[in-house]
Image 1 (cartoon, helix red, strand yellow):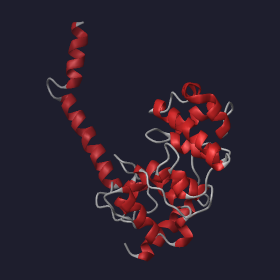
Image 2: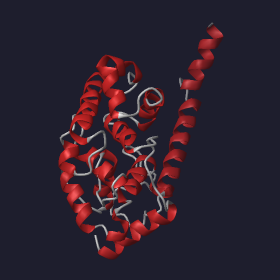
Image 3: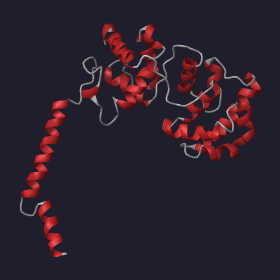
Image 4: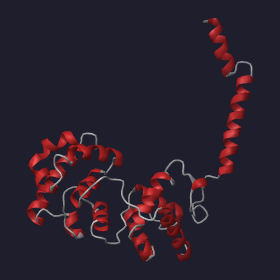
Length: 246
């Protein structure tokens, strides 16, 4: 992809959403860390439901550590893999208290040393809390980067390195949010909304969903159903006969 095209993509995404942010509800760096850690293999909606119950009770490392694993579990049962996540959350909280004075650490090595925190979670915290131009790659961003041609790659780290290397500096801070939201609501996995996509003409995806083709397909399917209903033995006729016999 040409640099001018890449810049044009991000300009459009920025124009549509000038101040993007996460959909995870939080009010402190620690709450964000907890929410992001819990969001693995589950939806933001499920995480927000869990943390809306947990955070009024315990929203600091010391408070989570005091609850203990069995005390945390009831609050996060709606989140996938909650047993493992409860254990990681308590261990993470204790480590922050013991090694970092109760504050979320600001460097990648320390973040990734926390139980349950991988590269993606660390990148989000470094970006949102500490203002570093990191680009975390989840399934949505991986899909968008490959489809559009922004940063093709066979593995998340390869895509991340490509995005960091090629995204213009002015867009790098918010690139993660623009791409994840685009993947979540427009460039979806099964049925991308290409006709409504604001970067459709700039995207290199070869299998775009054309609006005209969708309309023709819907029309042909409707005609086929109507033809089948009019045939002897068609579905409509069978329903009528069955009713008469009943």
